[in-house]
Length: 97
Image (cartoon, rainbow, N blue to C red; front, side, top):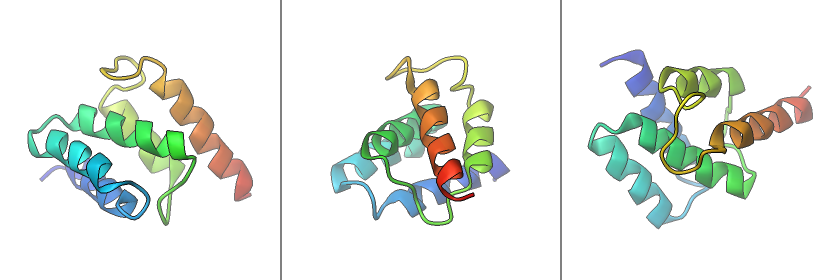
């Protein structure tokens, strides 16, 4: 298994306590069908809407994963998710300085 696959799986697991059962099922659907960029985008959409962060959130790791799946260049569900994600992640970083 590649590192990015494992990291995405960990991010989904760590987000379960924050999201509804339906939201997690949708994210896992894409993940289980090897649509990793769609799974991550869906996860980011839900988390940024809530304004909450999984435990042990590391913005650098999330950003690297998003760049790996090229969400900074192309998205499926929300054309502005990368901008929303950067704002959301930076808010967390500034709160924890």
